[in-house]
Image (cartoon, rainbow, N blue to C red; front, side, top):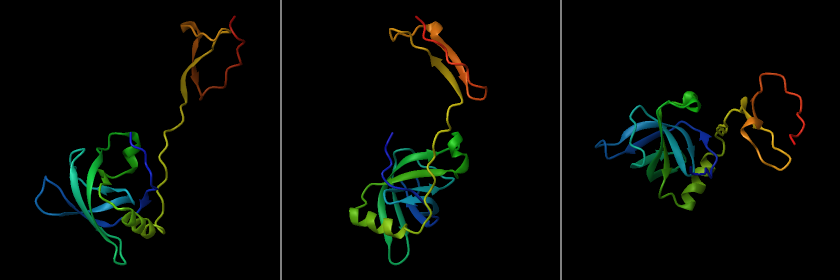
Length: 157
């Protein structure tokens, strides 16, 4: 999985997308934007890995045209996708450092997106290790955070 280098900002701006699947630019809206990519809200979903062209304007003479690669397609199947619109995420392929600085400067006043973290585990298996450090199948028991904690067990000899 790719590591995210930039903070994403909630910013809804019109964006024109050209793909090999359609002949002319189609207008969409960005759901969020960062200097290295964007999430584009759309009912029309390109293929994962497809190269597209994105054109958008951030105001004050900041117009950008980038080649981009589709790196995520949101089909609303994951629990984390419930708060998002259907759409796709793109990574800008030819954004120069000066372009990224201009985008970062334009996004300065836009609110950042909250980081999506996995919810903490509420249950699972716990293994009690033996004195020699080994673990056998009978040393496992089920742990459930919704129940009161179990008393601490002594080490098995």
